Amino acid sequence: MTRLLIDGRGTKPRALPPAASGPGRRLGGGALLMAGALLTGGLNYLYSLALIRLLPAPEFAKVASLNSLLLIAGTVAAATIPWVVAREVSNSTARSARRRRAVSFALVASVSGGMLAAAVIALLQLRYTDPALLVLSGTAGVAIFVSSVAAGQLQGEQRFGRLVVFRLLEVTVKVATGLVLAYVTRSAVAGIAGFAVAAVGCALYGLWLVRAELSRPTLQAALGRDLWRHAAGIGSVQGAVALLQATDVIVLGLTVGNTTAVAGYQAMQVIGRTPVFLAGAVAIAVFPRLSREADTRRAWTLFRRSLRTYLIAAGALTLIIGLFPPGIARLIFPASYGVHHHLLLPVALAGFAAGLLTLLATWCQATDRYRLVLSLLGAGVLLTATVLAPMAADITRTAWATAGCLYALSAALWLLARGRQDRP
Image 1 (cartoon, rainbow, N blue to C red):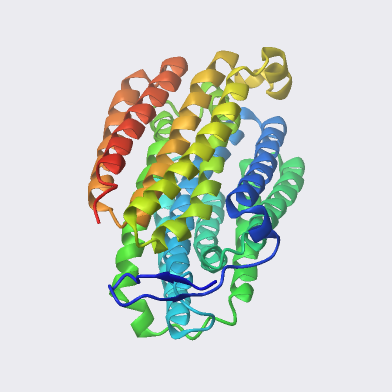
Image 2: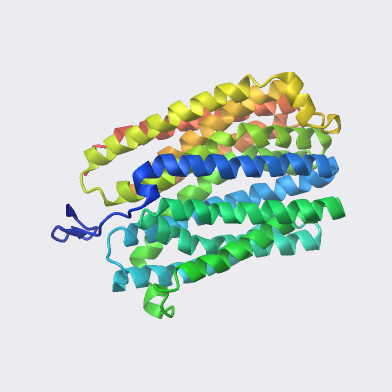
């Protein structure tokens, strides 16, 4: 059956292209992406646990610190470029001028964003990181952004099965490369090298996937004001969310340094931040549908259903993590990391709140509400950093304070989203 929508410029209703078919459609995008997120997240966590075993604590702390920055870059890239492309692809036909313009824009924007991310990472880590790590992390940052072009097209077409395979390929290459190099070198370079090799390979494969839609980048595509506006808005909000989720690690790195206690806290986060990956999967599945829904009340109903899915799945996962047996934790984490089992509960609660922030930000991004949300999140970053800095030497207080700040900001963002959901 033909579906209709009102396009963003207020023109008459027009036909929407048929939804993608295949396994992803039969199973449901949200369920498939959540399963893929659990699998990729599981591989990432096993990878981190293996690095904990293979690397000395100071070396792992370097990897964890750079991974936090690359996660911010990846979060921004995963929303800024793909979500803008997904919005255009879901409202256009195959190989149309609008779609080619969107993909061309995405290539220009991704290269520019990747270079900016690489520069920011270098500035933040210049005092603490070896030159080799800076080069590898910069390469990974650029490649992460470029790979987002294909992710956006697959997301807009609702080809979620292919998107899951795309992401699984990246994490598989990263794990295989990183573990081999870590076993041989026992240095932080190995962990970041795996990230860089995987990101570059995924970027090249992604460009091959979109080759049919990829026309020569033109000045018109590069200067498309509406696309840049959406990219800037989505990227700013998503970047603020990612920065907020990593504020505790950044504050600890700047105030305490790469100590054994900080490495132990980061090791606990390997498990505790699992709900963030679930939230990201739900957000990817629901965003194209939210962005093309002309009726705001129907969009809000769809968002509430997605939020309920996250609350049930992530709530159960948070409970399991919080009740993790101490004996198993001691078997997983080496004693040299100074890991304390009691950190698991606050870290798990913080992970649940961080995922909730991701979904609430998704609603605001899909409905083009950027400025007020960005102001709220920016204030949240400053507030969280101000609260955490004086207590950074006490890891336990830092863990609980981080969770408290994330829940307070989640409540504020919920009130903002709920209060404006009936606005046309």
